[in-house]
Amino acid sequence: MFVITGVTGQVGGRIARALLAEGVSVRAVLRDAAKASTWAGLGCETALAAMDDAAALADAFAGTEAVFVLLPPVFDPTPGYVETLANVAALVTALQQVRPQRVVALSTIGAQATQDSLLTQLQIMERAFEALPMPVAFLRAAWFMENTAWDIDGARSLGVVSSFLQPLDKPVPMVATADVAATAVRMLREGWEGHRVVELEGPRRITPLALAAALGRVLGRDVVAQPVPRATWDALFRSQGMANPEPRIRMLDGFNDGWIEFEAGCEASLKGTTELETVLRGLVAPANA
Image 1 (cartoon, rainbow, N blue to C red):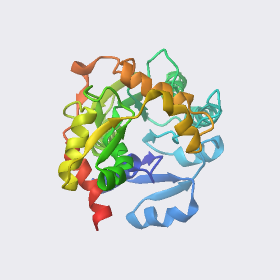
Image 2: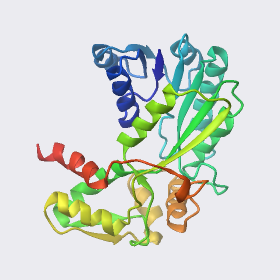
Image 3: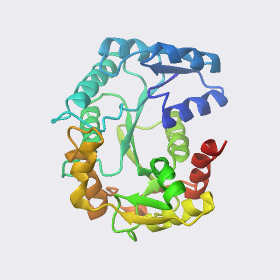
């Protein structure tokens, strides 16, 4: 039995479906009871647990071989990352109590960075999980190609991708969630001792200029990338409802300035096989249906 958290998201859902297709027993952990019937219908056991509820998590993790951990994303965190600290504390308590044979946790490129940013939340998780007694693996993934979904409407209507990633000719490590999920499935089924880190990106790094060109090909129109001026970010994010945009701004600075990078460097990272244009076609197709 493998336990998958974050099963309603892109990565967790792909992992659960892939394991089911391989004939593996899966327990899907959900926060919303209304969504449990869908996963039960696919053949999963289901368990209800909020990620800050240690007792419910321990029940969900009980009697299993491996657990996949995906922290709930907190894009507008309370200063001090209060939400993430609560989630991580509950996860550690549950895992220490149940002691599955191994744990795979989705982390991020730059989790080792000394500068504070939105990605510090994954560093908090990594450091806490390092004290767990069972084998733990951290899958540090690059920027998701699927983040481009936010750019499709502007590209389609105006022919513009407004880019926070700058300069526009700087290659950015990106990866498809399909490759993240496939790698996680392999890791869940492997055996290892102690702690390990796997750093994953796509087959090649992608500039914002190349991303805009690829989106143009998929949409069948000219699309250009335009930088969003750095001085406007704080006001823009606050106008969109964010109360604490500074961690997000520092994350973008980290990608742009190069201090968010794989610990072992580009040459040592594992490379996925899914191309950007494949992801873009999948994103655009539902809107065209």
